[in-house]
Length: 137
Length: 428
Ligand SMILES: [Zn+2]
Image 1: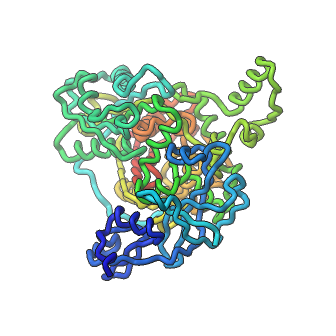
Image 2: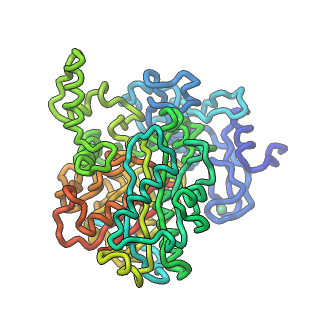
Image 3: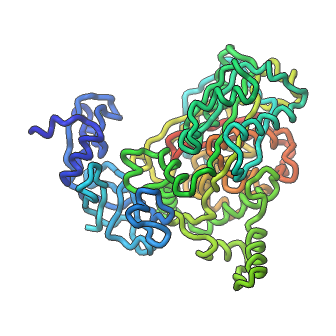
């Protein structure tokens, strides 16, 4: 397939995300999966890696709701009175990844449960670098 | 106890290295001071407090930790400017950058430079000028210590990642908001005894002052009964990155620190009370999402194992420690990663007062980053300075009661665990 020839780097990772697909890499040597686009395996240093399509399903393993926001999130309207949720998602295939968590009540984090099932929902898909985001499944 | 400490290869220094002097600038927000001014202040403090003096010409080399003068004040290539302003050109000075562990790493570089046999007298330190930028700008600069491709785009900030760690710790163990608050109360109690601290006041005094100010201004006086009441009031202690609140976070600070390292063979030319660097360890870690555990920093466990192995001691032998409390949860996790307490036992140790100045394991007697302040690039060596003073018995009102102090430890974290440096010091 043509897309399998894409270079293993962030540009390709984001290009896939723009297409609505979370792609990581699998090491053909040791089988290690990564939800990041690495040209070299972090476990065995193998260079024979291939693109791996994640299902986009996972669960919320840890999270925070952020009220003092960086400039980029402030521009989207988040701030002290409108916090957003970011978390660590454990993908069904095993690896974990950091992502924006949408569709949860970030102003009442005590109501957000660790362990909830999530599904991929790419945010800002029209931008050059879309945001990896998940929503409750 | 000490279950989390793995074994590490035992490495040795080529020859012993000692600390013979220390200098600290004031810590706080100093509008008109730049990076160089702060470091000159710390250096002058060092010169003024050398037991038997020092000729600046005798300093052969320097390593200065600095996270980001580039982004904070638009100044790169800081090291030669510092050499110039200290009147030290052409002495080689190198800037070391490992985020908030920059000066912990700078100290290690200095130790290795002497241990190699190449130099006998080396200046190490750190400096950060942070307060020129508004809070949003500082938030962006600090976030750039995390992974810009795979963490920051998720909206994660520096407090955000520690917030996620705190949530994971709370899910797994008995950790509560009250435990976090107690770390802050303790560190401010210590900071009140430290004249160099940015917050040289207890939280109780801070609360009383806020009440008095409200009364003066004819506003309704809050009915806080104690620190816990104050900390539970969202108007006084708003969320930053749930479950972390304002008073769980170290402040934004300008400051500088430095110590003089020498070959132990010549330490007595400078002081009768040298402090020896007997163990040093450093390790790298992955982003939190790729960490083995969400409740511990692997780099801290590894750096500690290296330092303990080099020093030939165990966590049990450490009598006083300065740990990297950039957030209250970070102190709890640090005391577990260092093997002082078992995994998940950190919160109970705080409850029982074991980490207080008068406890069996005093932690952050300086006030920690929380109360003393956290000029990020300067913090690692500032921790070493507090330990140096404790081991020499010159910490004044915050001197720990143990009169048999031999061993102290510093734990300095860069970013959210990307780097950790652990140094172990022994009284000479
Ligand atoms: Zn592999």
